[in-house]
Length: 246
Image 1: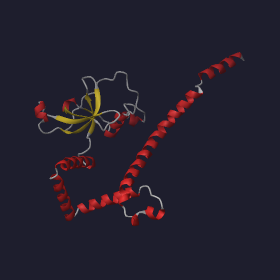
Image 2: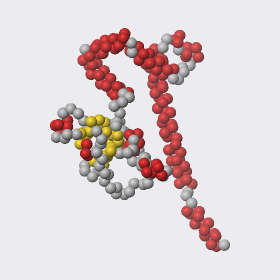
Image 3: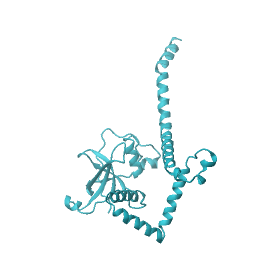
Image 4: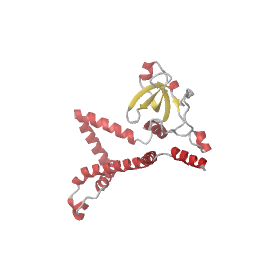
């Protein structure tokens, strides 16, 4: 009898406290609620931003708020999409192309506007380009010194005078993102032999960077075996160098 009482007391002492269980449940729920809430907030903010700037240009006769007595969320987004699609359809014709050329020539003759328009146009064309504008592969480079490895993205083959000035026959342009904001980083020109290509996709490498190494994609062997990736060893061996294909 006394032995059972002692076992019950030990079980009570080993059982997590109410505060510990509440904290664990809160963190578990936060992992689920935070991404959903943030996504909804970003979408809702974008809708309100577009509505606030597009709806005032819509005539009252075509604005549903005139008849319903309240604004309809997303109406400005629909108008913006229709207007953008209409502009795209117009520029496909001869008259539209001539109009675009005339507008671009007008911007080119304006000193300050020319720089802004050219920069914005190049950025938009790069982002929306279907081929050749995205990163090719995820890779590893030794940065900021030998023996330390960083995840980067292969952008393109380095052309122009840079390889010749650097005394290298083949170089690749590599974007090294920062954590946890991968939209900022460094443009590095690295010799091809110093680039270690990774099997993971660009999206998986981006998740690895954003999560500060907490989200590690599984290897091909682990996916085939249906296992989750094993924890990283304390002292990982240096990765094998792989020469990128031309």
